[in-house]
Image (cartoon, rainbow, N blue to C red; front, top):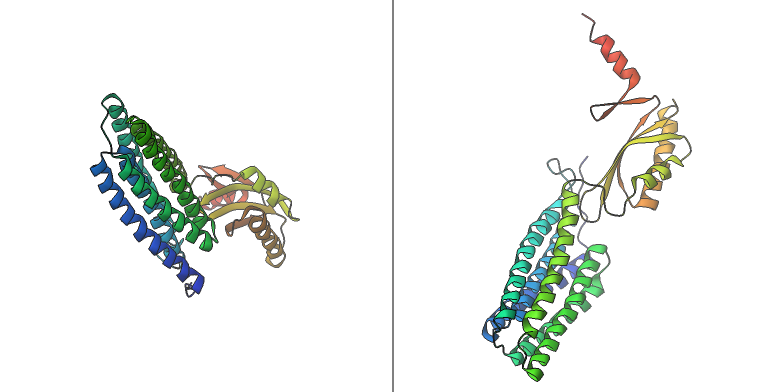
Length: 315
């Protein structure tokens, strides 16, 4: 069977346009913030530059996800390319953890050896960042039709607030002359980067290790499937993530010894339950009508085991 990608509609094209603009604007702001941070001797601005690198990467992953979503699975990538974005997110988040630790160490050093900063330049650059992040957040809100883009919107909305905090920090230094405000602000931003990055690492590791998706209960899934008429029990149940927002399921289901035409109705109902109640669309369900026995992690019908054992002695 050949699976072809659907033509990209106007909604997807608009989404890609918004993401391209957001990527370019964020990258320009990262460069400007980094240069201004060096000139103003402001660790808060340098921290904000590092923070906006995380914005750029988040937007890039969303763009890649939208692109790969339109690509079909093929004979070499039977589940498609969803995990490319997951792997990139894992690498990027690991890099951001290193950046946040460096910012934290530098901020602690500056608390003991204060450096004079230029608060006016801090405020001007941060004000530009508030405008940029606010515009990007508004554009993303207009196209945020799935969880991937909604998460990108929340990321940018949160960063609008953190950039506004840099303006407040600059105003505080301008009014009081206390340079320690800059490294304290940097510590707060570094903590925000670290917190979000660790969360991404945990989520992506769980996906790459094929762990049970967050918020999914195997007990609830088994119970829901066993409510379907004709199902005796569900066992050897596995659920894992294909990507950030899609899951797959494989299991064995014991039913009565009935013709395939009758079991097809049971299969249809099981898939409806999994789709409607648990949002799982990719399923592999094996029907059995006799008891099973665990053998080195593989579930094998008892009668088959006995039959194979007898056949092995035939010469």
